[in-house]
Amino acid sequence: MLVTIVLFDRFTALDAVGPYDVLSSLPGAEVVFAAHAPGPVVNEKGTLRLIADAALPDIQRPDVVVVPGGPGQNAHMADEALLEWLRAADEHSAWTTSVCSGSLLLASAGLLGERRATTHWLAMDKLAGLGAVPAAERVVTDGKYMTAAGVSAGLDMALELAGKLAGEAVAQMIQLALEYDPQPPYQAGSPDTAPEAIADALRARRDSILI
Amino acid sequence: MLVTIVLFDRFTALDAVGPYDVLSSLPGAEVVFAAHAPGPVVNEKGTLRLIADAALPDIQRPDVVVVPGGPGQNAHMADEALLEWLRAADEHSAWTTSVCSGSLLLASAGLLGERRATTHWLAMDKLAGLGAVPAAERVVTDGKYMTAAGVSAGLDMALELAGKLAGEAVAQMIQLALEYDPQPPYQAGSPDTAPEAIADALRARRDSILI
Image (cartoon, rainbow over all chains, first blue to last red; front, side, top):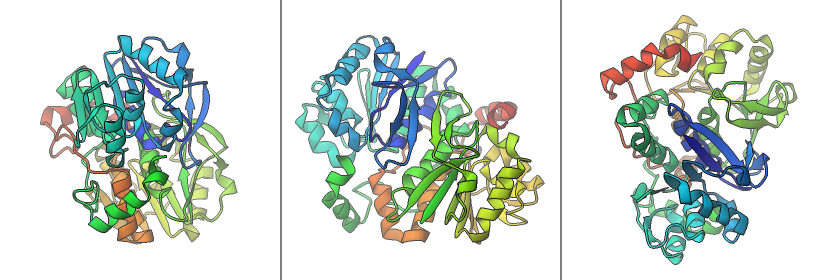
């Protein structure tokens, strides 16, 4: 089973690495990071570089596609080479997935149509603007499309996907190996639970977070 | 504020990238990945390469040290160049921290003494064997030493640390930006909540997970 995680400049590292560490633990899975060209791809903060081992055109029939998000997503909304690759990969994929603002790229490629999908909570209106039906849920599955909310939601999505691909016992084994028993010290992970002032502060800085 | 995340061959990516995405969001933080030599460092699965931008000897006074774990940890338990760097860095650090089996490296460097600390649930006895007092908690703080349980616990630790470094409001803002509102699809993230058969299966495979 070939899993391809798409990288582009100014991606958010955890969007990609969360799902990577889950899906690469699946028996028989080969996970490949791919970008327009092989080589280092820099994240949005400019201080993390992950190596893409393959060029997108060299990967023709991935079984699973994972598109992370991050501020760099915006520069690729009309990147026809990327969007065309996504469309071609989607023709044969078993699962086409995204984390965070990666769903905006799936939508821009025309893959989501009017499906239910999710994205970072600050990008919900953008997703709606592209025709999809935004759902404020952690992980949304509609057909073979699985989309996750912001950044860290990729972990939850990948475990959900692992269960569908390899069964509940394997997914639970991966969860326990990663000791994914989350205990955040604050209850500020969603706009519904965070203090209002914190959510407002992020809304005011939305462009620097998303673009 | 200089944060150094130590990389070594066969590290676990999420151990490093979880704390990275939290700590690199702190105002004024500079986060540098460092290894014996600059260049790509490969993870335990051999399919992810993260670039170390600095050689350890070039970083002399980090404010925060983060040591991830992963199967490669074992090969460095007597790596005097690494252990000596850890001791020197610790002399001036404000915080010396670890994720997963990274705490075994801190212990091997003599930094934990008889302090309370944690590690991956499968490595608790190894931590005890090195003199530290193992605590089955998600994040353990003892003095300026903060250790996290397995892999994904680095996210919780980094948020806790962010709160201590920059205050609760900043930490909450980071949590909300990363939409860290975890909703794992299974309750299998700790040996206490996972089905007994799943925990036993991992215990039987402990060496391939940890070494």
